[in-house]
Length: 278
Image 1 (cartoon, rainbow, N blue to C red):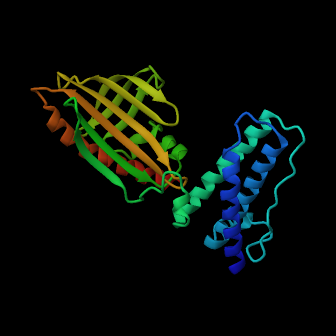
Image 2 (image 1 turned 90 degrees about the vertical axis):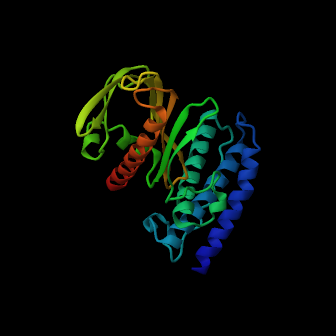
Image 3 (image 1 turned 180 degrees about the vertical axis):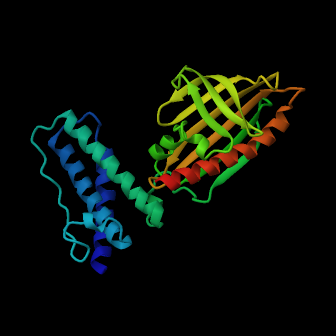
């Protein structure tokens, strides 16, 4: 164990030292020295990953030599005339390794100060109505889901199976694309109700619509579903709905209070389904 701890410390120090040099390097440079710096950083990252794997008994089969006597990863030799593609490939490796390192840091609460935006609070689940400067009302809800952004997005946009786990939002039919004419379906006292919308769609991150509410004349809602930031181990999902204007039929304040609870419940159901699948 002492050897593993020493390896972890040395690898961490190497990551700090090399990263400083790497990020000071102009992005367009393609010298042998640039490749060497990246290769050293990747080797340091791999050594630190192996230390984490052994410390927390996760994926130990990937540790060369085993945890009792792990092999020290050394940097590969740099070519004399690297190409831009070589640099891009190495940078992608660095980013991938760092994402995995952050996943370990946040899941096992180690070296968390190294995670750029900090680790997400696993218990976070927000639901509130915020009055905006222009007088509109913003229903803000969020929740932390222990899965990757891609996994959250996969479940969130699996509209065919959504009725199996969601007690409110039943999915979208029609042209599910940016600018597409689509229909959002919600349950209203157990009966499906359809709401036509023009979608805004950012694949892998968010979808939204902004249209007048037929059942509350005078109110326009701006409804967003967003797969937000990740700490490498968990993902923040945010659902918001902004109500502009008011209605004598269904006041915006009443509507906002009612929907804040419904959206929070959907978030909890989404979290349960994502974590059940993955």
